[in-house]
Image (cartoon, rainbow, N blue to C red; front, side):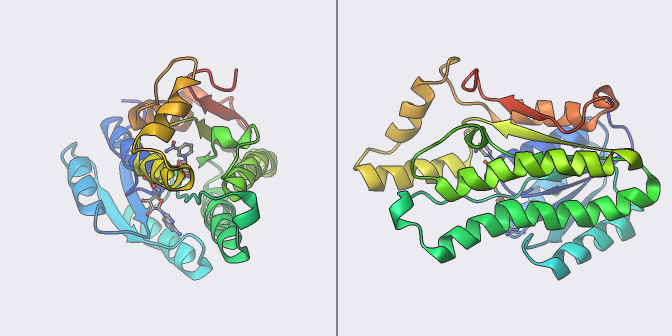
Length: 257
Ligand SMILES: NC(=O)c1ccc[n+]([C@@H]2O[C@H](COP(=O)([O-])OP(=O)(O)OC[C@H]3O[C@@H](n4cnc5c(N)ncnc54)[C@H](O)[C@@H]3O)[C@@H](O)[C@H]2O)c1
């Protein structure tokens, strides 16, 4: 087991990628704190972690709210003593033409995807600095890498996450903390079901058509499973990745090649 006895915290743990990472962390021996704005799905994930004889903790958090983020870190430290690994993974997307994006929608996406990564990353890093070690993995996206129609705020937020990852890595290197980012392409989760639905409404397409159009231009000709993203996440969280920091790992079937 790569992560035997380590303590991990993950935001967006109720979502497709979050829960795949959480389950994989437990299989590698980590105790896992599951944080999300939606707590109802967390019980089943916690049960699966406990079935590996690892401890689980469910935490309700809105990553855009400083006081809630502070309480999340306190709750995990109280329950488990410390945090070794942090997956900064919560995210949202909105789908509309740039001309139709309202200020409120822009703020919402940037608040969750960028400010949330900053607030949670800083709160966890302040705790990790006390122990002079830790691994932080932010979730960016292939959308950080290139222009994409209809997801302007999302793409901008994820490009900023790549930049923030580099800055965090440099500021935290002296404290033994590494910071890297995952950049998935298309992953078969509720987020892509939502994108497919919204694009269907915009372009009058059948259910599944918009996702298939994107999959068709991926060199490997399929979406990733959430488990394939989790595999890379667990590698970055392990000692095997000790000399890697400030990097963004693309898990995109060759789409960014
Ligand atoms: N699915 C993909 O194709 C894909 C591709 C690239 C990047 N990503 C990124 O991966 C991450 C996980 O996405 P997913 O595919 O699992 O999506 P998902 O919608 O299944 O999960 C996202 C989770 O984030 C939570 N969340 C949203 N707002 C929150 C808030 N304010 N506070 C706390 N939690 C909040 C949601 O409740 C949800 O459980 C996101 O950052 C997303 O942008 C996804």
